[in-house]
Length: 225
Image (cartoon, rainbow, N blue to C red; front, side):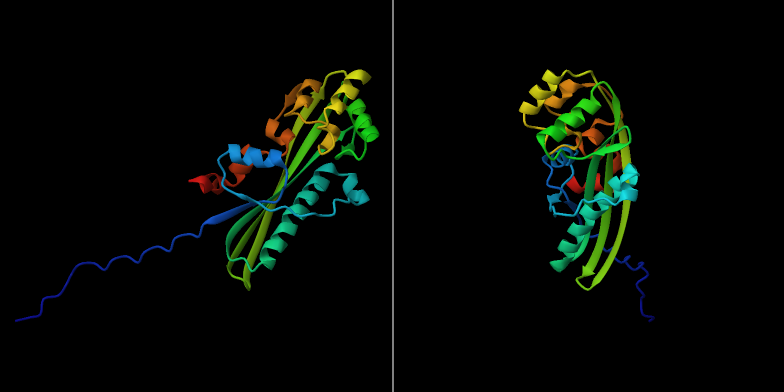
């Protein structure tokens, strides 16, 4: 009698699950943190101090300057994370926001008089708000086996201020929200009263174009599931 043979097909090997993606926001900004939370993204905050000095050629090219600062911020955090012998898959998000009026980059005001100067310049004019986002992808199955790649984009919105009196400028500055904001105003705060219209994404003006970020990196939206 011949031996019976098992003709059932062999089970397919189980697929190796993709490692979880650790998303890191390289910013201490509560506004950027809130925007990501509101979008349902699961992440941790890890900010690092970086030199935000810009060379003359970058000062003359605001979009490139904005991108460079976003890359510096994300890159600094990547270095710190890898220095801790990180293993896994991570996406580190750096961002920088600039206000550009008549070709001049407005960062955060360094003094009360600087804030007044910025607001007087913005009064009655349309200016551009640039937010650059740099996303660094880190693959580190082992501490000594690391792959890196990054992509950076810039999103733009146009903001038009109504005509402001000196009294209105002084009154706004008393509210105290100007000094950690590019252009010396916060569109999501009392600064909304200074604005006549916004053309473009509001989250770009606030500091992180989350809508575009999730279009460019749709896997981030799944991090909350």
